[in-house]
Length: 632
Image (cartoon, rainbow, N blue to C red; front, side):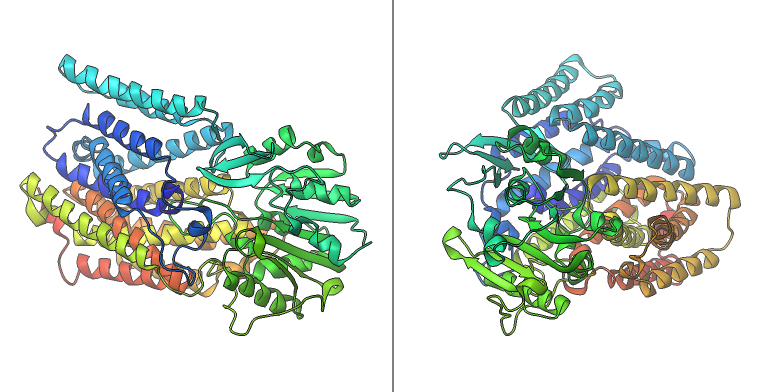
């Protein structure tokens, strides 16, 4: 579960490890085998043995650093150990990359590297679509490791092979124990003491399947019907339909048609298979696997009732940003979109275990500002932590309404952090990020000393380019999550698009061979200015194909321009390995700087991106610190 909520650290560790591996492997004498398989086994054994959920409960994860409660006890030793193992594993895998980068012209080497990454995205998409277990991913990794193994003494070869086999076996045991794997979670089903199925994701309790009329069903499912007795809802939309409890309740109250939207296909499949009332088999129910915000954007239908049904995920959208799967459902703009899909007397309802009163107050304020009247609110403290129902719309106006004085400001599409009370960075994140950066500096200096090149092995220019590009990539991915949904396949397409733009930049640089960097840098500045002046929220228009074209042009133009800047410098470098390593080490800093968005929002990151690219320009020209060009 730490991987799910600190996964930005996994990304940082990966970039750091690859950069260190390139530096350590400069002499070509260091082989990844059997070191990489042994480290891979150690990483997997630690994560599997701890079940990645040892020290946080679901509500603590929801409000990490966001509430009035004291800061929770994050196991920093566990986080540090995982970070170190991932860094070491990636470094071992990258030991042979440096000599390969120096063995051919820089742009050709870079193009092959990006083409390999693009192939990896394709394989990822296939494995995610098939819902494959960890063993399948590890087998895919093991094949090239074995095929690319250099000639080694028999004992070392056998040791590496045994470590790989043990890792795959451990993953297989995890799958055999009853785990399912969706594109988002490790899913496990258990029967609780009431004889009902309880769904666990990443080791945390997530959903319980209740039959209609079960004495254990939470009261908030029925609250809207209690507020409006006798009201007939002809059409209902359930966002976050999950295993089907909300759908079954709606059918029991005579709803004529229900559109059930669930982002996770595995949870939906469990509801189809296991819900005792068989709501998903009812012809009145129409199932859709999609992000709720994306569904609303694509729909022209109007509903008498829209339900945000316990829509709290336990994972983030991507390793590059701190946005959760449901974050864009609880912004002020999202509530306005739901309002626009209601009939004149329609109602929007949301309910959950909110754990903190200020979250209820935030949603109440957001609904009041969106609908023009205070929402109806019912709370259920006996449910174990501030269970509440909020409803907005003309039929519930004036029912148990309140908006607390001093309620937190609404979350916004540019600042999609509904579980963060204020624009701030948690002390725990600052502590962890500070430790990460200190570790990165120390490890880089040691790696540079080990190669005998010292500080001259690093390029400040390429370091700044790496930090800037990761921030730019993060902002682009977040923008596309808003525009097209937070589903795994949207992320896969965005990553594929970014890599394709890199390949295009390489091709343009190789064919056009620009002689001066100034036109390219001016082009980058112009694209960043356009992206800043035209925020993603302004692109939420129809038709969808036009939105996609315009959003793609505005979001990918800076990515393409940034890669023209990089490939122009990389084309002439005489130390492709250290230049590439410096770029990756800079991405480590970029990953840490992404947390600035918790304060500024994602649009303002573009100013930081522009500042970093300006620093890279100064390092390459006026200050004459382009150290990599001086290296043999």
